[in-house]
Length: 530
Image (cartoon, rainbow, N blue to C red):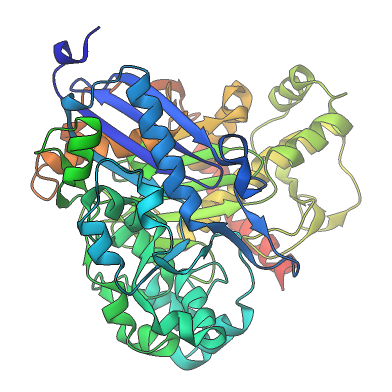
């Protein structure tokens, strides 16, 4: 179908660790185009592995900033060569891997404002960065800077109360502090510091784009209560930092019209609107169309849990971010390392390596498992920081083993009681209209979904289109921002998107069983974490 016949379209980008992706939706939110560029495969000259460079100390992890720009050149050329018609794109937005940072050197703004359409972006922006290799989320080399921040601000809980998270090594403020302390010349030669998301938006806008509230929440530098920079955190990190960071903005704000470079080189309409870019996790919240009271649970190698919150309670675990689609709400993110691999281990030892047998074992045991509770941390867990397998009988005594079918149910109930406990620690309460949106491999297992529904006493829905949810969410956000993100509810804009499918409802007796059992689980988990 010729592009001219399709009406308005909305373009979403995701600048992730291993690739850049683009996704286009039409006015009815149907996906009409997808493409991607893989850093390792399509740009082998940068010699990345998984899109990154792991340094000799095994703690420092970076990516070449110019590689991301060259990948964007390739992506847009690929779209153009495929016959994609950019003239229909009414608005675009995007996401970037959270916590990565970009350091524009003095004079770079002038170059951005005067891009020449006869040259590729990477040719014109080569040499415009004071730090050529961007620190990313995998970097864990800033333990000293984290200690300094928590000491200066009055401890980890106060840092969490102010910024939404305790000091984390990958968070941008601590990375900036390290650069200031170890490479003052580069810091002083820096005109603007961007996150990966605001850097990408700047490329399209042709000027420095603001950091958004949601991605800005992952820096240990923004006050999540005021949605403005936290002066105490800035002063504790590096001098004159506010000037280098620029202003903050809601993720649903319009940045401005696209740079003339893209109009002339690719045929974008001059009035194509650039909507503020955000982080990949907030982008996924938009792609999954979370709303108040919802919980999104992704069941993968690591399990993650995302929440929509109105009254968050920052803790020493998890993260509180500003909500990317609502100015008066928040999102929480929790990550659990012991996910699908732990489920597979128990499947192998207690269900003869068969998911069918695993499901039968789960169905053959009663809700609550006769009071038996298991905590299965094959590797050091994040939430809580503990390791080991711990089994408790109905009287709370530790036992060495469970019968196979009891083991299966203890694992699944334990995993999801843990998620409920830590969600409630961050301010989540089960509401009458709540939904759980389940994605990932294990979401195909009906018996596992039934346990989730029962533990949370909440119906579980399956998403029919979850691939590239951050990219899809940014295409949705482009439309939301164009139509007045601060005045038009996001849910109104995405109402025509494909519906969720109800998978399971909680059992009538679920609350009576799992509310007291979850309280017991919490006490037992605390006992092994001390």
